[in-house]
Length: 320
Image (tube, rainbow, N blue to C red; front, side):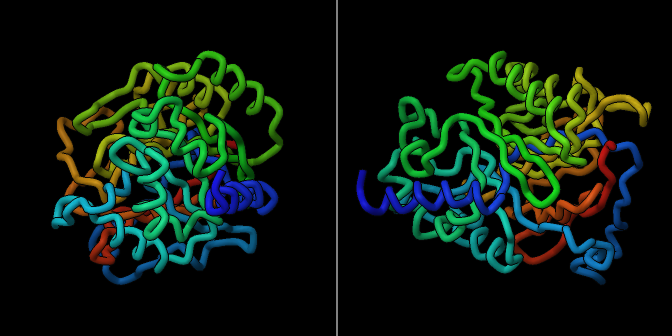
């Protein structure tokens, strides 16, 4: 292993001590989220900041990010340098990277040549998961070597426990992983929990719903996960709380997890198609990142576009 790679692996191990978090935010919240009228978004860039407690931790979440070195940048493709600059402006304490981090095959030389000079600035605070493009290199060897991480793990971020999952069930045993997640959720004392993985259970994007992740989704919902963060579809979409079957949950006392799809990291944008039940907001006009604050017993979010506009925001409480 080269000196540079060893430094990155050592940095990842340090993250565990620093309590930077693993991700799949799957959640069932008991109250109706407080969303902000679009006309009010222009007036305040951070309307929920005054409500944050001393224990709040803010970071960004996004997937589908970096083009190969030498790929041509255009208004609609390869905007990963711009999204990295945007994320840096938000001064995140953690970065949840939601898979398909390095196109096109996640090879180690691609990570070194393209990821490193751009999004690599966040490696010390990065909490990544694998996507399907990482597996275009056998066993996701480029990702595994660069980050020094296995397929799934757990991290604490602030008072939250975050579970970072591998949703490519063609390459990992998702039933076994779901059993692990169920056990972890049964043992945790964290007041709020989240999961992060690449493939969304429900999506209005071109890829649509992902049935193969049902064991992971079911374990998350039944285990009381509050939010789930995904990528894969190259758009941004926020859902209401969804039940085990992926349908919106009407009963506030029933298990349910709020899902975010954030595939707007820079590679390309793809149109949103027919909106799925439970979809509360969706857009594929701008690249951007999800600015996420994990607080004591609650969370808030803002989707920030490349032009600096806050396109979607709100807050909600955790299930306790």
